[in-house]
Length: 84
Image (cartoon, rainbow, N blue to C red):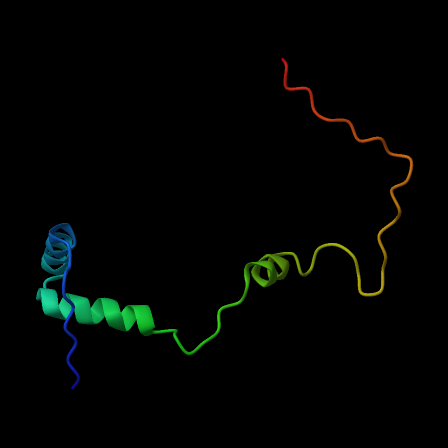
């Protein structure tokens, strides 16, 4: 197995890692290994972009394929009045 040495970790980060490891009932070393495993779990798969994820939520809502938006001519847009 490979080894990894991480230097210059802030004392606060080390203390938090120790507390987290204790909560999970494992050594700090094993806790760091688990964090690294979790962080690299989906490394090979490409995440979808925000726009793609939003569009997937609304896929069944709205216009049908080939349908067009009606033109919105003649509408006056007025800014909201926040004075009240």
